[in-house]
Amino acid sequence: MTQHKPPQAMTLFDLLARTWALPGEVRDVIFNATGSSLAVLLADGRLAFISVKDAEHPESRVRIEADTGRTSIRPRTKPLPAPVVSDAAVARADVTPCRLGDQGFAFSNADTNALWRATARGQTLAVNGARNEEAVTALAAIPRTGRIVLAYDNRLALVAEDGGAEFATAELSHGVSRIAVSDDGCVLGCLGADQISIVASDDLKSTSTFACEGEVLDLGWSPCKRWLVAGCANKTVLLIDVQAGVSDRIVDFPDAVRTIGFSDKARAMIASGAFRVVGWSLPDLPFGDDEGSAIETGKPGLTLVDLVAVHPKRDLCAVSYANGLVMICRIGHPDEMLLCEGSGATVNSLTWSDDGAHLAIGGRDGSVSIATFPKNMFK
Image (cartoon, rainbow, N blue to C red):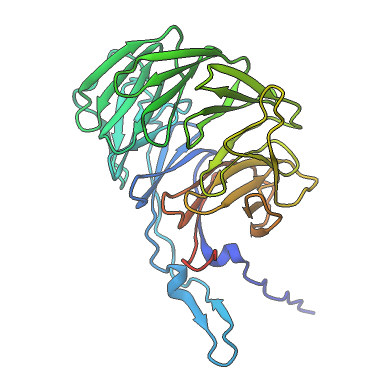
């Protein structure tokens, strides 16, 4: 007797997202400045490039029933274009790439450790004029300036995006493995060797240095530049009050704090590492005797929040859990929207495009998805 299974219903993720299987674990996903291309760093150093343009954008597939006014989205019918994947390791997997100009990306080359660039379509080549005798240990783009900052261990260099010419250099008292840039591009947080230095981006002069014990997993600035905050593997969040020149910690998270995020729209800081999204209202965070104003986002559960990614324009955040589940939450409210059911594969990278129209999801299983949201999705 023939047994037939009923067809599986399309999920919201099926209708909104495009998914590709890459040949290795995904380490990072990064949109270029215009949001036209997604660069993917694999754990083995290979790079993949995916065009963000959607031939079947969800808005073109929306249908509104005339009699009921009910809105639906029809499924995709066309095959997805294949990503461009490098044949061999071209990038250092331990150095996060950054944007380069409007379209491209910059990275530390796997063989030479020198500064290289990649186009939106995946062509990779050395940056002419950049120093090749020193190893790039960290890099970050300075927005709206046409410059990027490079770390060569303890030496910093401010260089032109086009050509790599140096405008300023400085030496710190410690090596640098991560650089966080403030939203306005004026201040840098340079991390390495259990220390964080606060550095002016125009002349690379260090104004202060703070101790930072334990492995830092994420580092970011508050919109007002008062706070530099680090999520740590030792289940804590390090808070640096840059204006006052002092630091403190939020302790006793259930797990490592892999990501922190700041929402200017919601005026809040949020963090992963607990059984729900935890956060506090800005500008005051829990510091010293001040407990701050805690906010609750989403609903508590039995699975740890692995990653959070703040929407760039709305009071929303994307949240991934250890089982691969991805939700969209309104910061400071219990509202949740299931985006992707957990497949069991951990999400390694979660990031929004600058316009908030796309969410990129990179998995430990080598999957990469771009979820594209209609303009009226979030009202």
